[in-house]
Length: 325
Image (cartoon, rainbow, N blue to C red; front, side, top):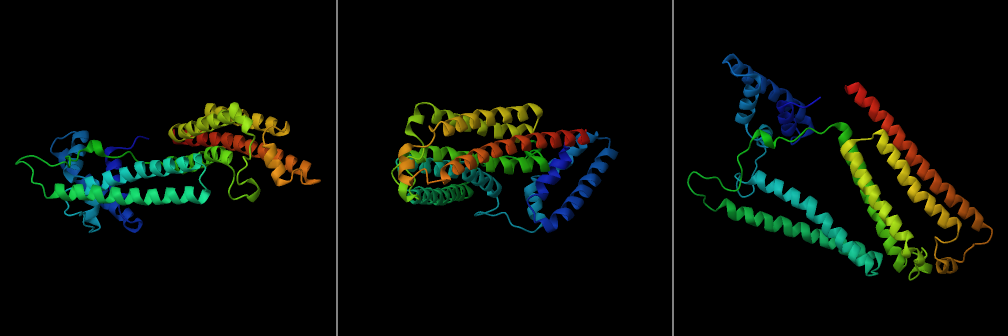
């Protein structure tokens, strides 16, 4: 069902108050909107016009909720608080991760130790957070004290109903968590494929020895990194569209495209760097065949589990859509 303007307004107001007060605010706000809308209907207004007029008169739902819980909205003063807060959150979400990932990848490619990579990413992230917070706040503090021409507003725009956010479905919230986890894992995996080329500092025998055969960079390692990129796009598609049968089929194809070449290279002895095997003392006596068998079974098991999970989620999503309809 499509959320009404009232639903979106109430949701936007309620999400900014503590859970203990959210239900009371929703009830009181809906009663107030209903009473004022009924009053306009009695005066001859249409339902749509009455609803829009009432919500516009109530103003920004976040400001209304702040008044309900007696929470002042002040930076240096209340005038630009919401504009400052929304801009700062946007900058933190966009800029900090990009800066951290960029520094980490740069350090990893240059062959820096793992501690240096993590430390640099953390230091840069904290520095970016501090600078964004300070300079953004300073700009708004200056604007707060800068007089505007008579009859004109400052940089804060007049709130309208068009700014109401769409309500978030519980299923979409769950998909967002899955998207974040999937993208994080895939980026770490891709970074590892690049990083291992310079050795693994936490494994004494492989401090300066690549784990995977360097000859794979001629085709197979770029191929696997490309598949990881497709997996990230697939995760975004799942978040936007939800599980469908054609996406479940795409999931099968991606698993096959990654698993089959990886197993073939492993069985043919072309996946792991021979120098790394020598450094680790391969084949470790009678344990060699067992290690290979366990590795193959694990890779196949993970791929099958992911395929089955995709079809199960597709079936559940279809059932939920039919129930909603």
